[in-house]
Length: 463
Image 1: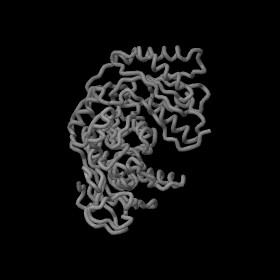
Image 2: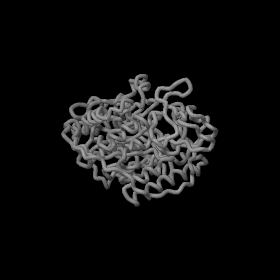
Image 3: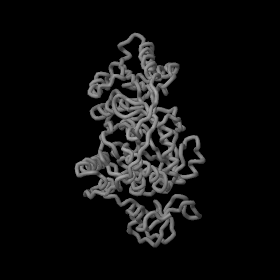
Image 4: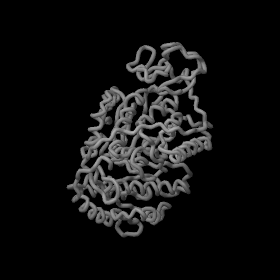
């Protein structure tokens, strides 16, 4: 496959004796030091002469990222064609409809994880009618974190509680942790949510009995709720890729980009994150910012993230991973150019800080790292009801909202059929769109539907 007429490398789709499947080969001779071009963009420089037809990878190609690059703004984005669709969702008093109707049990600190897990286990007897499930969203933090870390943990847990898939939320504290219930209540107060309850285990005689009574009351109300027709404009998708390979930027990510444009055309929303996996392609996203203010906010996010790498003593191109390289991705620029395809051709309408709920229709960019579970949690915490997770290597994980695994190639789809929900190699846009609607309508299309995991973006010290 040759992606762009400006490219001097092609992609070997099936593989041969000298070039593995999904990897690059030279379309013509490339001199040492010459730019290697894929997607019509520079993905690195040749470290030695490359003959036409030769395999192009880590042995003869390196990143050309400039950590001190300056950015400019020139708007280039498309307006998606308008569409009209509905899904069967749970209407909420505040904000968008939910695609699931669940009860979350959220520990403020890891010390009470076992209390929350036991509550969730015993509360399964209450699941009936419109209630889809009761889940404990456990984690290991909430105490001994300082400064920004402690604030981020509070912000993220509160944002999780605001996801429209949650009918009711029970916060369980210990009573002596840094991330105490008073701070959580203060943060959530402006949202005026009456579907959230709180208690500290140290403040009650029998924490299990106390929690079960709260959950019983929640379940009685949640079970009476029913799905109804909701406009597709209330859907927000989280866009994530993990275990990328040479096919990611050719199949799954561009296909998800088409879906993004359709959701945006219907008045809905999509959130793109993985800031370090924008390095090398960030100027393309900057040019899609709807105005100079959004450009400047996005530019600052990129610069601040790069600075955090440099302060820690790491180059910004400390990526791709070993799995990415095995799959055919050589440099961070190459990975990033494929990664941003998920955002489609629509304008970037907003820039969100970590733990900040989505505000605008259309595409938003979220400040979070590339780590799969941290990024997926951040997307859902910002309000995504469904995550579209593209993968060339496969993964069994899920965050706390339905996480559809979209394979980039036939091999991983067949080999890990117990993980993969959709094979994008055939580029069947209508089939993927239908799968998303079925998921929104309540069908358990995700192989990982029974998993609910969360993870934090931790940057500071732990006492």
